[in-house]
Length: 502
Image (cartoon, rainbow, N blue to C red; front, side, top):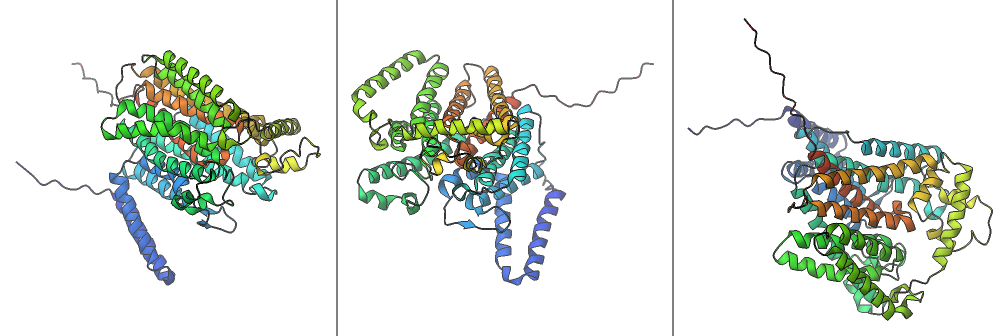
C-alpha cells in the first residue's frame, strides 16, 4: 500500500538558514542603506544552498580555477585598507569555500586528514606564513610590492585548500568527466583569444575588434603583448594550459563519442600552433617531454614507441625546414635564439647562491627576493635586463631555497614527491583493461600535467600563475581522492555480542 513519507528536516541545516535570515534582517534594520542588497545576498545564499544540494560539488573548485581566465578583470578590484585587495576570483573563492563548507555540513561527510601529503602541505603553508609575517607581507620594491601576499594567497593557500576539499569530495568516476570536459570547453576560449592575438601581432589590425575583453590587448595589462598570451596577463600560463589541453584532448578522444569527439579532434589539431603563438621556449620543451611520457606510458598497447619515433622524426624535419627561423630572436616567427633571458637567469642563479649562503635555513623571506637582490653589490652581471621579469628568480625550487631556505625547499620537494607517490599507488590499483574515465591513462594524464608544471617551474617562478596552480592542485586532489577510494575500507560494524553458554 502506498504511504506518504515524512520529510526529514535537518535541525542543523534549519538553524543555519534561520541564522542567515535573522542576520540579514538585523543588519538591514541596523544599517537601512544596505537594503535591498542584504536580502539580495540572502536570495543568493538560497541559490547557493540549492546548488550545493543538487549540483556536483567539485564543479565549484573548477569554477574558481577558470575564474582566473574569465573573470580576473584588472578594473574589478576592491582595495581594503589593512587587508588583501579583493578581486573577482577571490570573491568566487569565498563562495566556493561556503559551498564546500555547507556540503560537508549538510551531507555529514567525514572530513579526512589522513594523508602524509596533507600534513606536509600544512607544514609548508605554515612555514611560508611565518616567513611572510616575519619579513613583511609586502615588498619594498614597487614593481613586485604584492609578491608575498599575492603568491601566498593565489598559489599556496587557496590551491592547497582546493586540494584538501577535492580530496575529501571525490566520490565517483563522473567527476573526471566534468573536470576534463570543462577544461576542453575553456580551451576553445583560450584558443580563440590566442589566434586573434597572434593575428593582430602579425599585422591583422581588424583582429583586435573581436577580442573580448578589450584589456587583453592593452599594453599596460601584463607583459608579452607581442605574443598570443590568451586570456592571461603573460604568455607562460597560456603555454602551460595549452600543453595540458592537447593531451587532455587525446585522452577524451578515446573516451567520448559522437559530435563532441569530432570537436575534440579539431581542438587537438588547433592547439600546437597556439602553443607556438605563445612563444615560450619552456612550452616547447614541456610539449616534447609530455609527448614522451604519453607515448611511453599511455600508448603502451597502441604502438607508443612507434608514435614516439615518428614524432621525433617529424620534429627533426620541421627543425630543418625552419632552421633559419629558429636562429632568429623574434618569437613571433619561431626564433629561440634570444640570449638576454638566458644571461639574466645565470645572473639570478649567482644571486640566489649568495642569498642561500647568507641565510641557508630560513631564507631572505617569502616574496622578498627582489628586496635582497637590491641590497647586493651591483655589477654588470647583476644589471642584465633590469626589468620586472629579472627581479625574481626564474625557478621554483631555487626561489624557495632563496626565500624560505632549506626548510621551505625540502618541504616543497616533499609535497611534489608525495603527490607523485599517490598517483603511482593509484596506477598500480587500476587494471590495465579499465575502460572508464578512471583508468591507467587518466593517471598518465596527471603525470603529463605534473611534467608540464615542473618543466615550466624550471624556467620561471610559477607562483605568479594562480590559474595553473589552482588547476594542478585540484587535479592532484582528484588523484589522491581516487587513491583513497580504492583502498580497503573498514566496515566499522559493531562487535557481535557472544551468546551465553548454559
